[in-house]
Amino acid sequence: MNPPVNPDVPAGGEGETLLARRMIITSGVAALAAVGAAAASSAVFGPSIETASSDGLLAPVKPGGSTPLNTPVPTTPTPSATPTGTPSASPSTPPSAVGSGRSMNPPATADPRSPATSNPPADRDQSFAKPGAGSGDAPRADAPSAAKPAAKPTPPRGSTKPESITTAVANNPQTHAHLLSRATFGPRPSDFVDLSAAGIDSWLGAQLAPASISDPDGDSAWAAFPLAKKSISGVISSVKQYGWDAARETGQATLAAQIFSKRQLFEVVVDVFANLLNVTTPSDSVWATAPDYANSVIRANAFGSYSTMLHAAMRHPAMLTYLNNEQSNKTNVNENLGRELLELHTLGVTSGYTEADVRNSAMILSGRAIDYDTREFRYRPERHFVGPVTTSFFSDENASADGGLEMGDRYVSVLAHHPATAATVVRKLAVRFVSDSPPQALLDRLAQIYLDNDTAIMPVLKELFASAEFWDSIGEKTRRPLEDAVGSARAVNVQRSDKLAQGVKNLYWVLQNLGHAPLTWTPPNGFPDVTGAWLSASQTVARWNLHRGFTGGWLTGLTPPVKLSEAFAPQEGQSYSAWVDAIAEGLIGRPLSAQHRGVLLSYLDVEGSAEAEASNAWQVPALAALVLDSPYFQLR
Image (cartoon, rainbow, N blue to C red):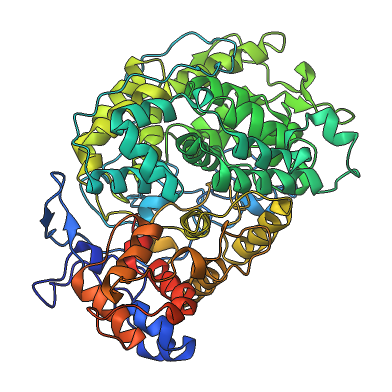
């Protein structure tokens, strides 16, 4: 299969635009021959696709930068249980935290203040994305911090009143399609109807107040996986010790909610923060605690404040065992959690923290452990390091065992409110909703709003969805495997049934083979959220096959209410051109261009103006699959 078109290469024809150059489906003749003529037809959807500008007009887009085709690797250096300068891997270090290929001792060319290389990417996603305006470094860790006093984490209460939001964006098919492609895992046909009736501002306001949305299908989807809502004690009493049933059901319930819930924006934001504060689920150390972590840390705080979420994570037994903090003690400090808290969860690798900061971070967090009988959080003062601790951004001269837990909370609060953490958090949101390389001006504005609002996530989202950068980013994101699978299910309008659990479990294993089952990313840095991490011939063919499963109604438990061959059967007097457009609009909410409609007409070997024959209804699943194969669907 030919490699994806490089955006740095000048367009080969005047009609070629950003959408075509960034498409996932490419035109490799050899691979296309292997998957058959139907898939080959879908591949030619790529050239000459036009993109809508922010005012709804069609306009070409200038080429951007290149997208390196790297392979994902863990970002975390091998943890050490020895003092800085004599690093060695701890025998207790899990494989998920080892193997970055980056030495803990910086090379001679490195900034001596940083534990990373001289010019590291801001995060793992940036290592795949093109260099651009949004690739600037985060503020350094020794920058002034508007630290707030620590507060006891309190999960926010869901509002039953929609939020007030003003985007000042015109309501039209282009803006609606763009919003639904980003603020959902993929629109259902009913979502276009709902958004058209409510308008952008009202629809977004409701999505930002998920408790205001009646969601029987989403609630039933969760109920199909009862272990996913269990408390820690509930899991222990329900599954065999060290069994993965509850942890695996947590990922499957997450997938079910992504498919069936009407609270789509909430589910998307949950996915962002589940990756930012990643705990691999299932895995041995979280067999009893994974459901509670997903519910009480991530889902409870996704629309709350990041400070509250971070406090909850740093006291949760799932995070503490996943990164080995329950093994840390004052004489043998395990650095895993202390390091990842700085590198991944808050400041970021480019912020300028040092190996001494990592060591002190681990000392501050020592003593946070679990009760091995109940698997609940337990602070063990006898394990807490006692003595003064000082980092580039935090110091405490009275790190006593008695006050060690509260001192750690103060430390987490300082980190949560640090400008470098603001840059980390808003970049994750902007990469999900705007582009693989978000404009730096947008990141700067969002970071300031994060700091001005005491780390609240809602104001950041409101500014993001009202920004010109969001509305100008049509075609600058592509579907990852998860979004492709869930989006396909929603596009064909799969319905809840008594076989829902079976269907979701089957899809979960398909996604596992694609490397993207929810919550399963092994390293602590979360799933990559950019195009370059997911480009391969095997991925493309697997997606094509999955599309045919959905459009053909072959996936038990995940089928549309009516067979597509019946739902989109040619109507009396309907031309073939109108029929093809009806199929496209039913799946993706828009007709095809004349050129691309012509591709499907050629596939059918018919004239567009001729009356569509009812006997051709059997072709609907193949035509629908070709639409899902195309960049019309793959770009979001």
